[in-house]
Length: 443
Image (cartoon, rainbow, N blue to C red; front, side, top):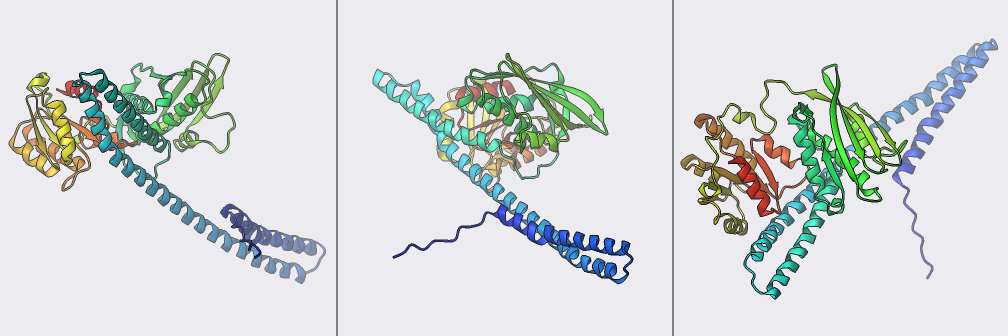
C-alpha cells in the first residue's frame, strides 16, 4: 500500500511574508506603475489616459491600505495571544515552584535536625546522603526559578518605591540560587549611591542584571569575578540618568557587539530609554549601560516598608531569642510541626494561626515580638493579613516585625511582600541559620 504524503505545514512567518508580498507589495507596485504611466502620458500631451490611469491606480492602492490595516490588526491579535501564553506558562511555573518548595522545605529542615540526633557512623552516612539528594532537588527548582527570572513578565506592575542598593544585593543573592555560578563572584561596590530612592519597576532592573551576569558567567572560561558600580549621570526632563558599570576580571561577553536581535537585557535597556557600550582586553571586560529612572518624592516612606507603618516608633530595645513570643501563620500542619521543632527550643513561646483571619484575631488579643507569615493560605492570604495588621498598628503605634516565609520564590515576590508592609522575606526551602539570622536582625 503506497504511503500517503501529508502536506507540510507552512510556517506562520512564511505565510505572513507571502501575504505581505501578494496583497500589499504587488498592489502598491501596480499603483506606482499606473502613476508612472499617468505622468508619462501627461507629459506627452494626452488628456484622458493620465486621468484614467490615476483613477485605476487608486484601486490597488486602496486594497493595499485595507490589507495593511488588517495585517496590523492580526499582528496585534497574535501579540496578545503570545502574551497570554507567556502569562499562562509563568502561572504554571509559579504554581509548580510553590507546590514543590513546600515538601522540599520540610525535607531540608528535617535533614538539618537529623544531623544533630544521629549517633552511629551508618546513620550519619544515610543522613548525609539524604541531605545531598535533597540538595540536588533544590538545585533543580532554583535553576527553574532562575530561568523564569530571565524572561519578560507581561504582568503590569504599579509604581514601587525602591533603593538601588537592596535591589542589586537581592539580585546577587538570586544569582546564587544557581549552583552553576558557585565558582564565580559578583560584588557590588556601593559608594553611597545605593541609598538613592527611585520610583518605578525595580524588577526590570533585576531582569537586566540577571541576564547580563548569567551571560558573562556562562561564557567565562574560568572563575569570573564581576564588580557592579553605579553612579548618577545627570538629570533630564524629570528623570535621572543612572549609569551601571559591570567589570569582569577576564574576557567575557555580556551582549556581544552588533548582535541582532538583542537579548533580553538589550531590549529592556532600550525600553528604559538607555544605551550600552561593551569593551574587552586581554585582562578584562567592561559593560556600561545607562537607563532613565524617576527620582522618588522626598515625602514618601522608606522603600522597605508600607506607607501604613510610616511614623511608628522603633522597638524599645533589643531582645534575646529566648525571650521572644512569635506568631507563626501557616496553614499546612506538617510545616507547622516542623517549624515548631525548629524554633520552640529557641524562643519563649510559639503560637500558630492557620490563616490570615486567625492571625488578625490573635494579634488583637495577644502581644507578639515577631510574626512569621506564609503568603498563600485559605480564608485570608498573608499579603492581605499583613496589610490589615499594619492598619491595626496605626492605633497602637507599635510596630511588630513580619517576615514572609513562603514558597513563592519567583522574581518580584520579595517586592510584593515588602510593598504591603512586611519587614523581610525568606523563600522555601529555608536554612535554619538564615531564618534565625533574619529574626535576630529585626528584634
